[in-house]
Image (cartoon, rainbow, N blue to C red):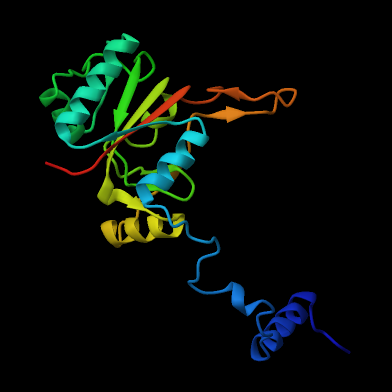
Length: 213
């Protein structure tokens, strides 16, 4: 009488399959080669083009002085007074530029939130952020307007490069969350009509600074 249980039969099949492994059917799809053909454009140009095509707003700054001038002009134009920023380095830069963040305002009540990022992904036109940043998980999601300040040395080509950069930075303490912000939030779920800012920032700005001084 055969007393083999269904579980034992399944395990037996698995062991047999493991001893006679099947070759990968599409071996060329595995490895480190790029899936997408790399653009001949510089990463700065590629990011700017892709990001603006996705309704993001891009500003290139020659240096810190240029960043201060462009940020001040935008804030005055928009009439923003409730500026939310909890990243110490970014807040210090704002203060040097004559821009004071509001320490009393909450994220829910602010006009605009200003953050840094881990890096910028040129191919997808995305801002790569993580929970390890001082802004945490919520700042870039709940603010009505998000401004990201980044530097040219933070540009990478693809998502794989962003993951590798983050892994090297944090080593064994990889952040519990990494996320891509690719322009303002948008959806076409409602009668296939594109709606912007339905579940996140209505506007997303990236100020890319050529060098850090």
